[in-house]
Amino acid sequence: MDLMKSIAVAASGLRTQSGRMRVIAENMANADSGPASAGADPYRRKIPTFQRRFDRDLDAQLVNLGRVQRDQSAFRTKFEPGNPVADASGNVRMPNVDTLIETVDMREAQRSYEANLNLISSTRRMIQRTIDILRT
Image 1: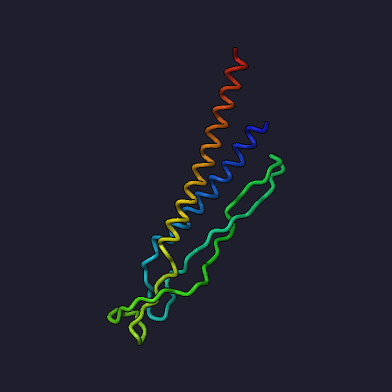
Image 2: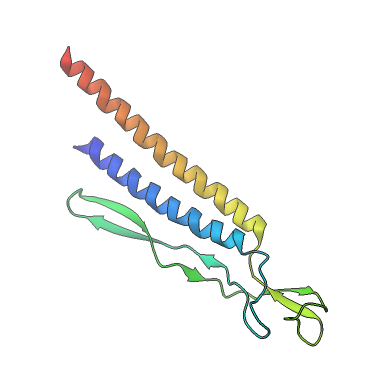
């Protein structure tokens, strides 16, 4: 049944966007965390990726959260000469997380999640209407 296929495709989108939001939330939570010790690297931003997969039972393409990759961009520096993990110049390496970018990514993930949820709700209403018509 095509309506059940659309629900399954939207559900895979829900799971994927939920995982994406978890990764973004982790990035935001660690945006201001410094390194644990002198010489250690601070938190490195994570980037969610997506994978397509073909479901033979549904005969449809689904989406999954792929491997979470590490952003290899440079760390930010913050001048804190009194910090025990500061280098000789008084700079502390901070995570390469930009909270503005993460906020925009989170909003986009939320909108995608809501779109998939709306698709499931609409499909359920269509199924219910079909059942109501068949009953009469």
